[in-house]
Length: 296
Image 1 (cartoon, helix red, strand yellow):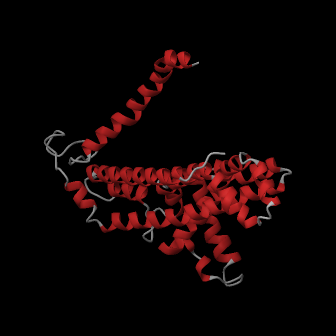
Image 2 (spheres, rainbow, N blue to C red):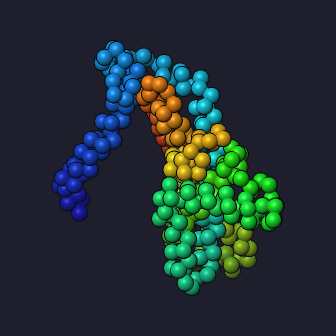
Image 3 (tube, rainbow, N blue to C red):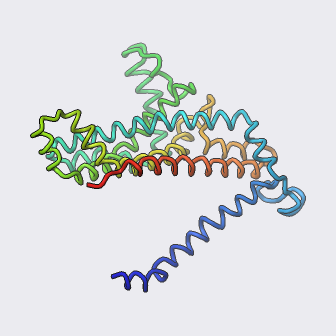
C-alpha cells in the first residue's frame, strides 16, 4: 500500500497544489505587495507599483484609525461570547440527542437546517424578527417589556448580542453534528465501569466525556472561531455597520467605500492584519486543544 501512495502521490496531489498556488498563494502575495503601495483599485499613485511604494505607512495609519480599532475590539468581543455560547449549546444538543436515542435523525435535521441558509438571507430574516417580533410582540410594552431585547439592531451593545443569537441559531446545529460523531466514538464500557464504581453523572461528564471528546472540541472550536472572526454577510444584512456595529470584514469594505479616491492600499493592509489575526488565534487554539487530546 505504501508503494501505491508513493507512486501516485504527485499525480494526485499536483492538481490541488496548482489550484492552491494559482487561487490562494499568488493572489495573497500580490495583495501583500499592494498593501505597501498607494493602490487606488484601477491605478497606482505615481504610475507603477514601485513608484507608489509607501513602506509601512498604510499599516501605521490603520493602527491610528479609531474605526479600525473599534471594529477589532468589537469583533474580538463578539467572537469570545459567540464561541462559548455556540459550543455550550451544540454540546448540550448533542448530549440530548445521545440521550433521546429515538428519532435522532429527525432532530438532527431540524437543528441542522438553519445552517443551510445564506448569511444575507439569515440576516434579513433576523432583522425582521428583532424589529417586529422582539420589539413589538414578545418583549415590547404590550409583552414582557424587557428593554434590553427591544430595538436590538439600533445599539452597538444590543446588536452584539443580537449577532450572537443569530449566529448561534445558525451554527449550533452544524457543530452539534460533530459533537454527536465524537460522542458515538466514546467506548460505552468506560461509562459502564464508572457506573459500577458509583461515579455521578457530573463526574462521568468531567472525567470521561470531556477528555474523550477533545478531538471534536478541537474541530468545533476552530470552525466556530474562524467563522465568527470572518463574519460579514450577517453583519451587512442586520445593520450594515450603523450605530458603530462594523466588524473587521465589513470595516475593510467600508474603508474603500468611504475614502476618496478609494484607498485600496490601506484596505489591503487591513486585510493582511486580519489574516494574521485569524491565523495566529486559530493556530494557538489548535495547539492548546490538540495537547489535551487523549487516545480512546
